[in-house]
Length: 401
Ligand code: NAD
Ligand code: MG
Image (cartoon, rainbow, N blue to C red; front, side, top):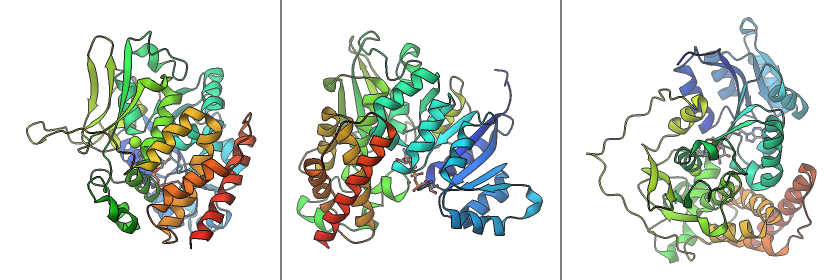
């Protein structure tokens, strides 16, 4: 396949786990992709190290002090421009120089730049699931209006995308699964590190134990979300916006080995699954090169070494956060925005040793029942509800401490 021209890529969340995997795939294909800009929040040392290796045109730190420190440390002969501030970031992602945006900032902080990239009609590789959890309807409408190409990086959604026909792939958010002959989408999840821990011991699980995922290596927030299965809950909501299923067409299946990354069941009894070693470079390479295929650096799956693949249901008593998310999804975008903000605060408090593991679900539940949910018609409305929920959640953390 001839390569048209080098694509200029902006990586939002460059210093994180997805950022590292993206840079690893890109460096295997310098003739296809060029690192136009790297974006991070506060990690100056890591950003400087990335700049020395990848030499972007722009290095953007959202935190102003971090940007000043980076500027002072940057060797002038590299000619890298250091910028800061949210308006400058929006200008960067929407600039005519930018072709592709990897949206991999963690949490609600990713919403504004990701939404801006979609509105500007960029090719958007979406890892930041929180953007869809918070703004699903507005986000998908903006995508349709601008014609932005949206490719799901999250391994499950990428797997589902790969198992669906082109008519669905090119009409995300507004596709008809019935027309495509799909009966259900099976969203798989490993069950995380606590799948078999006795229920009475869950309350004493530590952040270090929660972050030790059996199969995937990820950032701390999503690792804790995997232990509570809130990650699967957020992914359930993400899948609802991407693939437009009816509630009964979307099911969660626990699959501890993480070899199958999700499946699509068709009307005629066929089930299509996407498999591979659990390594985010595969879905990233798929999104970067779609509809073509490029090497990702991931080892091929060896079926003779695989061992058994097993499946079970996600029990409500063990994974209350997952069930809160499924309920919130049925209620609508107000509830999912509240849940996302509450959970970010609860996870931060858990990682800081301020609350116990099982109190994450308690805080989420209290926010869902107590925060007043007015209707959301704009990104400003969403950000206001997000901030109101955070205040409520921090008060709940204080009461526990
Ligand atoms: P991480 O914690 O490793 O990295 C987070 C990145 O976000 C860092 O570069 C950080 O600088 C940046 N960031 C944080 N707050 C910011 C702010 N206020 N403004 C600007 N940048 C900010 O996280 P990760 O594991 O790479 O996950 C990134 C996103 O991808 C998350 O939304 C996560 O749910 C999603 N995701 C990750 C994986 C995975 O395997 N890691 C898989 C699927 C989806
Ligand atoms: Mg995932």
